Length: 148
Image (cartoon, rainbow, N blue to C red; front, top):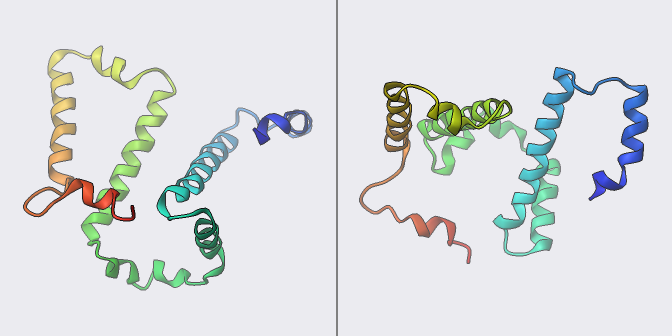
């Protein structure tokens, strides 16, 4: 909504600064959208709006950036392999979203010969089996409904 209201300003900006269509500007727009959507996602993570705004503010004011390098993140209950799966999943989502810009990925896979299609779908299925956290004591609904 804000973007629609600021459209005249954007138009003036793009008349003077010719960045539209350049790789750097496209990457900026992608990163901007991911950050905005991630900020909106915080409203689902906390029990009320004031707490969400307090937690959002602590992202910039807590001053605990050292946890990124001192190994503290490994003390949260996630193993290094969990972070590897997170990183690989993020790369996969990014790659698919880049491929999606030229047309439907599903249609592209559907246009491949049957053995190639089978290998792709089977490979994706194996990735889910190998990286998924399933087994004795696993309760899928427990995590998502933990705060409700």
